[in-house]
Amino acid sequence: MSVETSRGLRSFFGRIRSFAVAPVFSVFAVGGALSILAACSSDSHVAGNSAETGSPELAGILVLDGGKPAVHARVQCVPGDYNIIAASEAERVLPSAFETETDENGNYEFDSIPSGSFTLEAFHQESGQMLLVQNLSAEQDEPLTVNDTLQGPGTVKLLVSGEFRENQSGEAIVIGTTIRRRVSVQNGKIVVDSLPADTLELMVYMDGMSPFGFKDVSVKPEETTVWGDSVTYTMKAPLALPEGIDSLGTVVSDFPLAIRLTEIAFDSAEVVNGRWEAVRISQDGNRSKKLPIAQTYFDASAKEAVFWVSVDSLNVFDSLEIHFDNTMDPAYAKDVFPTNRSYSLVWHFDSGLAPVDDGAEKGYFEGLPTGAVAADGVVGKGAKLEEGDVIVAENSSAADSSRKVNLNYDGSEYFCFSVWVKLESLEAEQTIFKKSKEYALRYVPEKGFVVDLWVPDSSSDSVKYAWSSGTSDIKAGEWVYVAFSRHTISQSNFYVNDRKIETEPEQIAWTGVRDTADFEVGGFTGTIDELMLGSCYRDDDWTRLTYLNQRPENYWPIVTAE
Image (cartoon, rainbow, N blue to C red; front, top):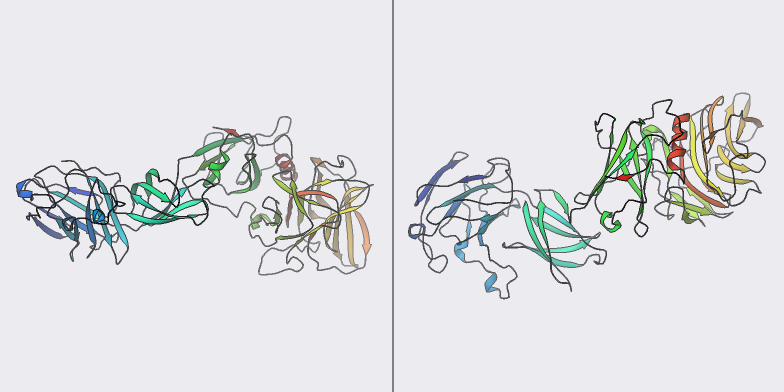
C-alpha cells in the first residue's frame, strides 16, 4: 500500500504513516495514547462493504501544533472527484459516512472510505488549526492509519494583472476538497485567507470573468505566502571604478549606492510586486549579509528603475549582486541613509512633490512645495523651480531633542551637503537653498557657487564665512554636482563635479542675530535633484564616489543580467 502526499515532514510526530498488517484491526500508540481500531460495518449506500468484505477503513490520531489532542475536531474524507461548485446543493453535501469528529484523545475513525484517491480534511474550531492531506489511497482489504498535526491557516496572495479592479470580489476553491473561500483584490493581488498549510491547486472565480487556475501554491502555517508565476532576476554590478579613475585612498563603508536599471530586459509589469535583495560578493567569492535596499523610482513604460543600496564595504575588487523574486513579500529598508552616518535629510524627488518624501532613516523632514513641478533628474526624477517657487522642509526651524537629528548647525558642529543643480541662466545671482542666517548655497556670476556659514565667535556676535568655487565647469542648462563638508573652518571639502576647490573662505564680520527659520529650497530658475544634508565630514573618496555614482552620464556601476 502507498500513500501519496505533496507535503514534507512536519514537527512533533512528523508525518506518521502506520499501516496494519492485519486486515481486521490496527493497534498503535502515539504520545502515550493507545488506540484499538476495530472494523465496523458501513452503510450500504456509501462504500458498499466493511473492511471484512473488502472495503478499506481509515483511522488515526490528530494533535494540535502544541502537542495537545485535537479534541472535537471535524474530520472529512473527501472523494477525489468531489466538486464543491456542483450544480445542486445535494451534490455538494458529503455522505454522512465521510464525516466524523475526534474524541477526547484526538482519535478519529471511518468505517468506510472512498475508493480511489481521496483527501483528508480536519478543522479544530476552538483553535482555528487545520489539516489537509491530499492524494491518499489505500489497497483493498488493508486498513489505513493517518496520524498528523493540525497547523494554523495561512493567507495566499496571487499576483494579478493591472486590469483587476481594487476590491473586486470572487471565490477560490481547492480542487478535490470542500475548501471554498471568498477572495478580493487588494493592492493588485488576489487575497485568499484561511487556507490550511499545504501545497494546493487553486481555481479562482472573479466577478464577470472566466475561471483561472494556479498550480502548486505553497501555503505555510501561520505565514503569509506570496505566489504567482515564478519570476526571478539576478543582476551583477562590478564595483571596480570607471576606467581612468585612481583606486580609493581610504576605506569607504556604509556607502549609499544608486543602482539604475535602464537596459535590463525585464517585464516591468512583473516586478511591481515582489522583493529585491542585494549582497556584496568579495573577490574570493564570499557573500556578505543582505544589504539594505530601497526602490525609489520605477517607470513601467520606460522599463527604468532606481534602487539605493547601502554597501557595507566598498572594495573596488568586489561586486554587487541584486536579486528579484516575485514569490516573496516586498520589503523596504529604511536604513539605506542611516542616522548614525549623519543623514539628516535626503530628497530624491522620485515619489513626487506632494509632499517630497524624506528618504533619510528617520524621515523627519518632508518637503512642502509651492509652485515646483516634477522634471527629469540626475537619478530618476528631480524638481523644476521658477524664481519664486520654494520647497520648505516642514518643522525644521528649531532643534527638537526628541528627534535626535535636526537641520540646525551653529557653526561649531560638522556640516555637509551634496546636491545636483541645473541653472537655466547664469546671468544673475540666485539662491539654491538656505536656512536663514545659518547656512546657504548661492550662485554668484563672478564667483560661481558660494557656500555661506554663519559661525558664532567670541569677539563678536557672529562671523560669516563664504567659500567660492569659481566659474569653471558651470554651464547654463547642464547638471552640476556641488558638495561641501566642514570639519573645522580650516578643514573643509568643497567639490564642483569631481573638481576639488582649493580655496580659503572669505571672512565677513557680521553683528546680526541667527534666525530660526525653516530650511528651504528656492530662489533660482532651474532643476534640482538628490539633495542630501547632514552633520558629518565627508572625505575626498566619499565625495568623488558620490559624483561618479550619481552623474547623469557614464553610469557606474554598470549592471548586467546573470
